[in-house]
Image (cartoon, rainbow, N blue to C red; front, top):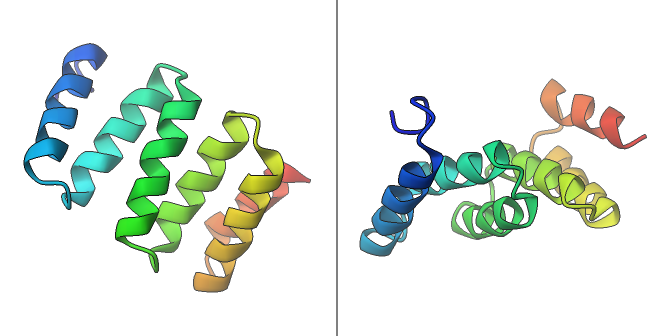
Length: 104
């Protein structure tokens, strides 16, 4: 709600507090990463998505978002490797292949 209302600083603070209280809450990691992407803090978003991937290593969507954040942060080779892993996890997911096209 806070993010949608445009209060990104407060959304970040609440999200980080929620992670502190429940470090396995996947939805909160996604919220915080989206806040960082909204603010173009790509390095921070990349770090949060990396943590999210470690919590859910078989979730291709998490790896897809991690790849996009890594590319946005200028880490293209890293992003391609992450994306290839996401494709290996979900070989029929069109979102993965569409993202791969962004790196070509």
